[in-house]
Length: 276
Image 1 (tube, rainbow, N blue to C red):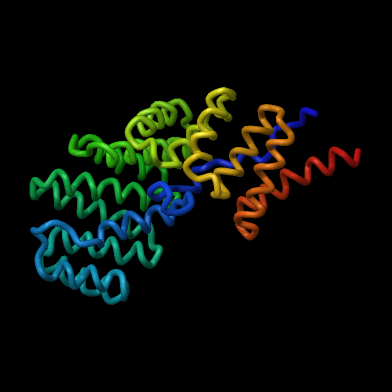
Image 2: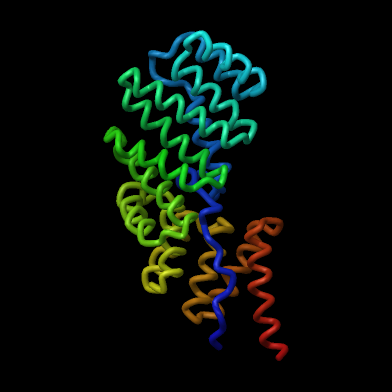
């Protein structure tokens, strides 16, 4: 029997790590992953103080903040601000982290280091998304794209992040264009397919939604966010059995998650309809 659309959950609250390495993650976790990459050993060129500060940023963020602020006053430049940003991120102080990443990007641009500047801008964008500031996120990601230094997967992920900001702002048309680029360049990221499927469903393009959620399931079929959207797409398509199956997978995969709460509410509507 056909039934109304149920619990249309937006994936802007989710995010991704490399395929087969784990589930689709939320904005804050994606931003933490970006900060972790910033803290990882980097190519030659960083001063000795950088390694010490980054170690602190991971193990003792409060101490790292003190060290990075002093280092910034000592003209530590982009490296001091990068350390400060990572320390803030590890305290989930997302607005402060985003601002520090933007300041690091400005320092890198002054130093004519376009590649690092673009990386800092994308990390700022992730932090702004975690802070629920999509316009600021889009501005930062625009700056990264404008640099012309991003390539391959990094370029695709930047377009994906800009699409996430557009979806969070309700700008579906712009999001669609960016998601299509992201899929072409970062198609192994399940979030690209998940976001694409949700957007297609919202825009009443069910064939596209069905195709794209199938791709997301291939890459992260055990993820609650993916199965929740699979159920939403099935519901929109009038396939009650598939919708129930997907939402029950959400309950099995992550019973205490927000996605499970949405799945339970969706399934309860079937019970309510049967009782009438």
